[in-house]
Image: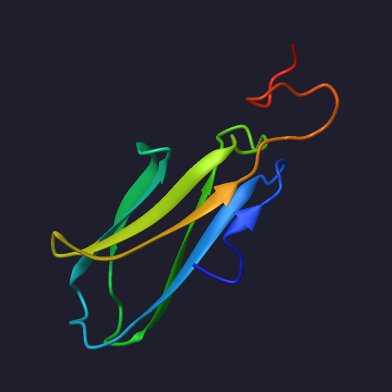
Length: 104
């Protein structure tokens, strides 16, 4: 997942682009975004061609800023994990923020 691995608080969406090759059109892939180890967004689709690229996005239902923490995108093909990568959204900073990003 590039070009970024670390994003400032306030980001409203994450996009993960991944290339693939040597797959059979029609094979199923599943994606899952997790936030701090808990499922956040997931789905599945089928490959339309033998090679190319695909992307998945994650965002809050209300389009609010994503919560700080670690996010991972994992891709499985026919039930086998073939790719996983992570990024982080940083805690908000400022005089009103406590150690966990909440005012106190």
